[in-house]
Image (cartoon, rainbow, N blue to C red; front, side):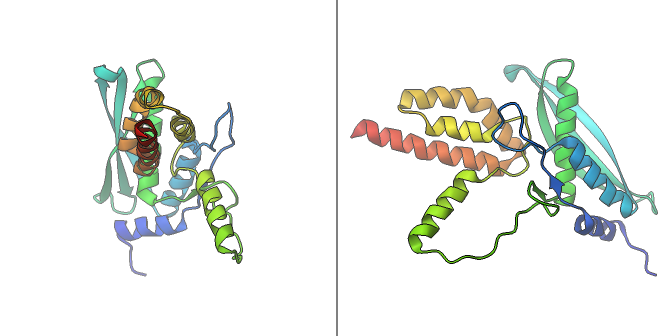
Length: 224
C-alpha cells in the first residue's frame, strides 16, 4: 500500500470532515452562533483519523488606538508518520478586549478560523450535512423575485459567531432616516466593520454593500 504524504492526508481529512452544526440562538441574537468547541472537535477528529496532529502558536499585540489586544494564530499541522513534514496555516487573527478574559477569547476565535481555513469546513444548522435540502419548484417570475428577496433577507453570514451581530448592523443601517443618523450608525459600527475586513470578507462586503446603498438613497432623498 502506497504511503500517503502530508498533503494527501490533509486532502483526505478535508473530504471526510463532517459539517459543523451551528449552536442555538440566545440572548436576543439574530443568528445561530458558530461555536469554537464544535469547530475544534469536528476538525480535530478529521485530522486524527488521517494521522495528522495540530499545534498552535500565538502572537499578541496591544493596539492602543482601539484599546484591543490582537492575537495572531499560526497553526502547524504535523504528519504523525513522518515528523519532518508539516504544513503552516498562518495569519488567522482576532481582536479581544484588554481584560483578564480578552486574550483567551481572541485566541479561541483565531484558532477557530484557522481550523475552518485548514479544512474548508461546511457550516449549517438544519441537518447532519449542515444544509437544508429543498426540492425544485416552479415559480412565476413575480413569485421568483419575491422568493429571492425573502431568501436574501434571511441569509446568514458565513463563519460568524456571537462576537459580532452582522444582522443587527445591517438592520441599523437600513433603519436610518437621514444622513446624520446614517453617519452616527456608521461611526458606532466602524470598529466591528474593520474587524470583519480582517476576519470575514463575505460579511464585510454584505455590510458595506448595504451601507453604500443606503447612503446613496439618503443622499438622493436629501437632494430631491
